[in-house]
Amino acid sequence: MGIPFRDIVSKREISIDELHGKRLAFDGYNVLYQFLSAIRGPDGTPLKNSDGKITSHLLGLLARTTKLMELGVKPVFVFDGKAPDLKLETIEKRKAIKIKAAEKLKKATEAGDTEAMKKYAQQTSRLTADMVSESREMLHAMGVPTVQALGDGEAQAAFMAIKGDVWGVASQDYDSLLFGAPRLIRNLTISQRRKVAGTRSTIVVRPEIVDLTETLTNLEIDRGKLIDAAILIGTDFNQGVRGIGPKTSMKIVREDKFNEHKEKVPRYQQVRDIFLNSPQISDYSLKWAGVNAEKLTELLSANKFSEKRIEKAIKSLQKAHKQFSQSGLGEFL
Image (cartoon, rainbow, N blue to C red; front, side):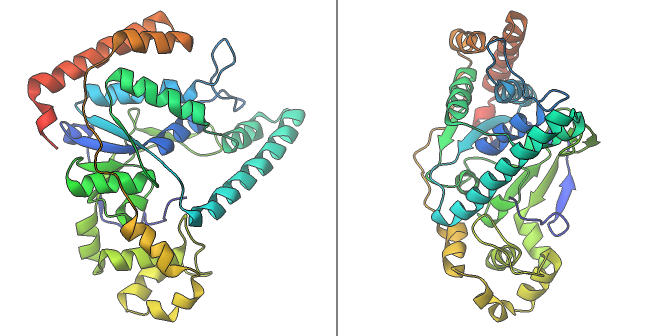
């Protein structure tokens, strides 16, 4: 769900040019879900090919990843493994929300209310195992590495950043900071516009970087207290304490008064341990091996992408990989 730390963290706007030559870890599920929700028709229907198969996720992933690579960014996508038991409640709540949204979508469709149809259709987005599998297959054909996490994808991405194997984590959520990511990159869109959920409107957004060390220094706390503050507000692994928001939680941990509220957080230590001691894998391979034009053409053609779009993507990817090789970007983080 993401921790509401927007007004608390230390952030600054950056240009995409500042990310040239940087390796960035993306939360794969987060990215694919964004495309499934955003790339839709006026009535909220996801993009489909002539066979009726949803392709919103593939189109968005292909376009954005290719463009970022052309700009010198070296992406790696990290995918969730088994969800911690404490996240199951959150998952069930999300399922319930989708069921209610589906009911409202049906009523909106019957009434011919296109605005409501789009709003509720977005809320019913479902990322299937097949969608994830074909997305990873496409990324590999594009020459982009992927990593399968044991548990939470953002935890694995943060681990890779802590090790120095990637420069930062790219995500809209602030959770990776709790997992220890030294840098978080937000709003990394090519159009520099983002859709407002449930509407046809868009807003201008600029890429921004959140520095963990700077944030902790300015807040005068350590990472442990940042985690405690998040737990008080509520995370994917626990419900927050009623009446406590970001500013109040910061005041509590800064004044060392967390213990006064600790008993209000069931399984507190288990939740905290997820952020501090989640199991990670370290034998991943980060290689940008070049585009497999034959494989990519086969996959995209099977999904009814136009020949023109396929050729354009392949040329752009070949150019990007050549740039990586010539400039030695593979040696830099």
